[in-house]
Image 1 (cartoon, rainbow, N blue to C red):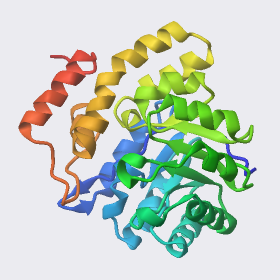
Image 2 (image 1 turned 90 degrees about the vertical axis):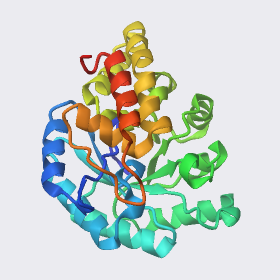
Image 3 (image 1 turned 90 degrees about the horizontal axis):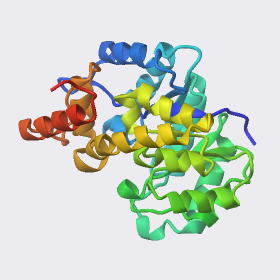
Image 4 (image 1 turned 45 degrees about the vertical axis):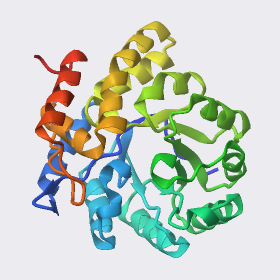
Length: 298
């Protein structure tokens, strides 16, 4: 098994745009703040990074800048999943050369009807065979409409260069099934903050959480409280954060996450078209949710 310590909290960082171009000065300011919050590392080019809207060249430059700006005590995980095996391998190798510590690889999904277990097993195994850095499987049926079963994950967990999975289903039963069947040193990362407390108690080593872009200290605190066995305090915090997490993931999506970041002192900015920014009505609803969670004063 590729050795990489993934115990902790990672935000899948948004890509900051100004007038449709990546704003690296805004990225630097956000990373400087995140670097002081106890986060384990950063995930560049996850779903919240609007990676599907970045050109091949932009992806490489973005990862290079994130690596350059991230403090030494933190890890950088790069989202390198593309539709073809060839392109995924090329991007993964390039991100490894740039300095990423691991690659997060989403399942190909355009030809979803043909992405059966055999196809997915072959795809992930091939990428892992050719990757100089450990890879993490990325199960996000909300976007891909492909569901990786616990059985498939268990098979892939035997590959020496597949180090773990980010499971974004929010389904704690599924996480438990995976935990029951994977290799002992396979890293399970929960992909939604709404399930963080439950997932950690079932054996997840950490999380890749959109919410950690906004309130990294609170996500880290839930993680640490569970590690210390202080479940009542962890549960309280978890329950308080559920409406906020729902807002910036399920309800308002990436534009909502970016709007909330702007309200909480980070740079969110506008998404890249065709995504539209949050409307004024949505922004006022998001603000209300943040006030209710004691993250903003009324």
